Length: 378
Figure 1 (cartoon, one colour):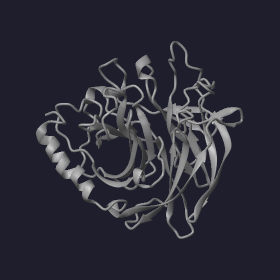
Figure 2 (cartoon, rainbow, N blue to C red):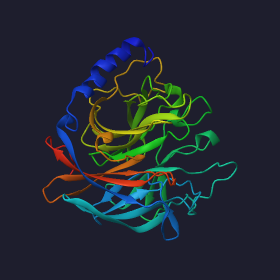
Figure 3 (cartoon, rainbow, N blue to C red):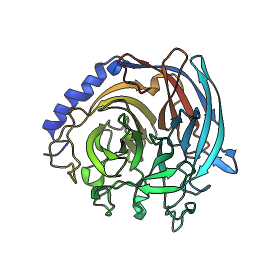
């Protein structure tokens, strides 16, 4: 049966959405967050002759005490790149930031990614970045450029951005126009190192074309969480996570709207922290954090399409609606744990992609994590 048939949808709403709504805000699953503060990187800030913006992922390197942020510039302003950041904070406040390095992402032949050509066709769209478990390389993703037939990928590079290898993607992710593969600009937006340090998980922002319609204001949509083995680069498992409906109708009707997964963090064997972002033209942004449990979810790796089959998606509980923080929230796309604070709590940081627009901001939010269930990695 179809995923959004009346029978399954009723079960889904009763078991998941209603459960999330009745849980105390910011205290789901034994976790709660205390907001400490934020820093803003100015629009059009320059570092080493590059424009700093479009920051779409964040990760912490405990060896250096610094953070990494990938830039989703498709080599239009400067070659595709990632930055190192020094973030100065403690439990009393978020004090300052600094850009300390920039590295360019390399193609397999060792060259920088070229500028887009042929009516804006690009060869890369960097979105996710995580330090490998042995800390001598990075895993990163590109959403590709589906409308021009440029496929997404999951890749490993060394600490200087040099190509090492590609992970293997199931055929369902291969682009066949209007038939299969990720929607344009809705591919691998999120990546995390799993708690076992032998696998990674990537998530698509929106549903694959063959999996059904994208989210609307009336209904959510299924996205895939793909698990891959680090050593072999091969896919192992795949599960479904259902994003919430778009938070409001577009104004005027018919303009751009989207709801999708923009980043994830592994918390345990089957548990993840998920950032969902919803945008509706005329109504703005909504960003929420969810605790997610895949324990009882169906493995759909063998399924080329999610339509007309029965499966169990992940359970989810609302942890925090960022709209309740009392500050303006921008286009959050990256998330990382940071250092432990003096009181022993782990820090959590979120970063926004300003799309290189003066009307938006590159925003870094800082939280302290209260962990009553010992799920936060050390």
